[in-house]
Image: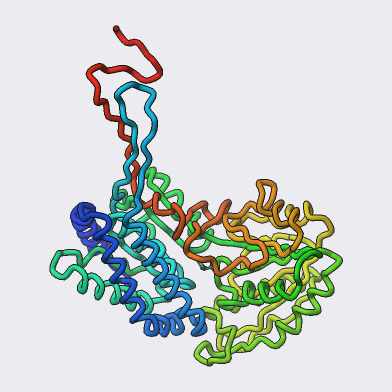
Length: 460
Ligand code: UN1
C-alpha cells in the first residue's frame, strides 16, 4: 500500500477541520439520520464487505458477516443516541443560579484500526464520532485494504443518498500509511481524540506522543483473556465457550481466550472433553463452508506461534496440537502449563490456549489477574457466591467480566475495553460516546446579585 506524504496528510486535516465546523452545527437527530441511511447501506453491502473481510482478514464467512452485523448494530445504536446526547442539570449552591452541563462536538477524531476487526472496530468509532458531530480521519491496517475501501464506499454512498450536494463528502477521510502516518496523528494537536486499536507495543509507541501534547486518546490494546472453570461449572457449556473463545477467528481477536484456569477436581474431565473437540476442528481455507478455523494473517504470525510453542516445550509443558499445516494454517494448540510464567503472561496472537490448575477460588482469581493485560474475563460456575465474587471488586480486574459465557463476542451495547496494558479505553455502547464530545459545565446567574461559591465574601 502507498503511504501518503506529509503535505497530503496536512491537506486531509485541513479539510477535516473545515467540514467539522459545518457538521457540528447540524442538529444531532439529523446527524442520526445519516447513520440510519448508512445502516441500511451496510445491510445492502453486508455480503460484499464480508467477502472483503474473508479476503483480507482471512475470516470464515459466518464471522465476516457477524463483523459487518456489528457495524450495522452500531448504526442503530448511534441513531438512538442522536436524540439522547444528554447532559445533567445540577442543583446550584447559590440562589437564582442554574448549573448544567452540555455535550458539544469534539473536533476531528483520528481512528487507527487493526487487521483483525477491520470493519467493526472502525464502525464503533466512526458511528459515535459522526453522531457526536465530529469528522473522522481513519488510518486502517495496511493488511485490510479491500475492507477499508468497501466501508468507505458504503459510507460515501450513504452520504450521497442522505445529504447530496450539502458538502459533507469528506466527513470521513482515509490516511493511507503505516507507523509514520500513525505517529503524525499522535503528534497532531488538530486531532482532538486519537482512538487507536492494536498491540500493546503500538500503544506504548503512540501514547507518549499524544501525552506530550496533552492530547486525548482512547486505547484498545492487547488482551490475555482468562476463563476460570470451577467444579461447580457446567463443563459441556464451558467446552463450547472455550472452543469459540480460543479458536474463533483463529485466535486473533483481542478478546480471544488465552488462559484456562481449571479447578483441580474437574481438570482431567475438562481436558478429556476438550482434546477431542480440538482434534476434530475443521482447519482450512476460509472460503470453504465447512471450515471453522481459517488461516493466520501471515507467515510471521505462524512463526510467532511456533516459537511460543517451542518455548513451552523447552519449559517441559505438554503441548497438544499446534502444528503448522502450510498456507498459514495451524492446528490450534492446548498447552498444559505448570506455572504462569512470562510466556503465559504474553499475548501471542494465535490459537494457543494455556491451561493452569487451581484449588481455591482466591488462587484462581490471583492467577487470573496476574497478567499485565486486562481486557476480557469469564468464569464458568453455577455457584452464586463464586459468580458474584468474580464480578465484585475483589474479582476480575478486567473491563469485560462474564459469567457462563466465553470472553469474546461482546455485544455493542456495553462499553468495550480494558484495564492495565489494554489501555483503559471504552468504545461502542453505554456512555462511551462521552469521550467523543467535550463537556461544558455551564453556570447561569439569573438574579441581580453576584454571590460567590463557597460563601466567599470578597470586598462586600
Ligand atoms: C477485537 O478483537 O479487536 O468482543 C475486537 C469481540 C468482538 C470485538 C473484538 N465483538 O470479540
